[in-house]
Length: 194
Image (cartoon, rainbow, N blue to C red):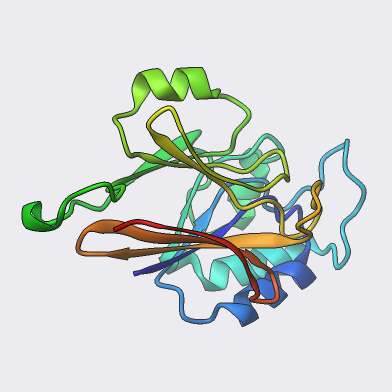
């Protein structure tokens, strides 16, 4: 399964279109929050069009798993055709026992503004993949028995990687690969699991 991971769209229909055009073969679209509103601390992103952004997301609703960001509200759920107000979600990818190993088989998704690493480390079992957004800064690392992945922002990056997203690949063992990519499809960093 190919899971396309997008965070911090902030209403940029242009960035969302570019990302979806670059990764057309996804099985699941995992959204880490901040869909339509740019937020009071951010400038308007290029291609800002919340209505069009909502329409693009709604066209993919059957493939979306998501969480609420700090810029999302009840009014956003009124225009989106999928539930988007949960503070976190879990995706379980149980491996076949004979194939299990270091591969994460649980993906914990949150926006990033409510739970810190200390809390997550006390909650989650080893080898959980923790996916978040919020900071607009890319992260791909293993720390204290958990794997952390922040795909950055497709519209308002705050790091040198530029506008980015992610791709999580799974197989019968669980998560097999995590890729940090530009929204144009270039792979920037990869973490694989044997």
